[in-house]
Length: 255
Image (cartoon, rainbow, N blue to C red):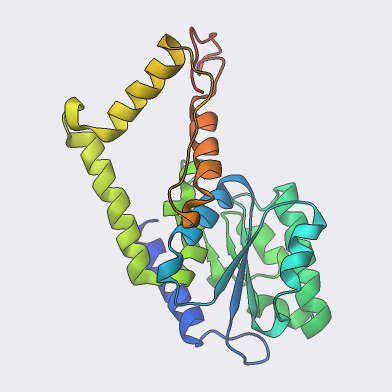
């Protein structure tokens, strides 16, 4: 996120974590449920699970499947008075996300009344008009640039549930790590450049040796969602049959 956006996220996260930002009945937030899909879900889920030892904030939950059983099972674990929902959708029109968001809205409105909705929701979106129509206060809306693709968005405002779970300071260290790898990629010579070497190895495996599959085997249970995250990152980025101008790709572009 930009420095301005990062500061706003930090202030909000601190408020939720400290209990300064309360629910409609005056109770502190104990559970945060992120509602998203694709890049608005895979990155936050992966990173939040991976950084579980650093959690000292409210419990984090994630809903992505349009199958109502997913959100129903999670709602059984929480109380409306102490739950905050984060709706993550750039356009605020994604069918799966908005279907689950409406279920969450009904959950709060039925238990606490319509006026309580604004106290139990935040949004990561750029569609301010649609967010307002849903009943979310503009002060609880966090945007990000259009050029931020979903599969890269964990380092943007989409990372808000992670920031609430581990705190702004630890989230800042997470961003520092990403910055360090970016610098390594830009500056390291090819023989020492890990992203470049891994890319070349992947190309060699697919196009020279003909391996159609890549296995990602996490060494730690907390990285259990890392393969799904990498699956989208690699295949959505590289799994193209044509170039940007529609010309067929020669050879295989990804596993």
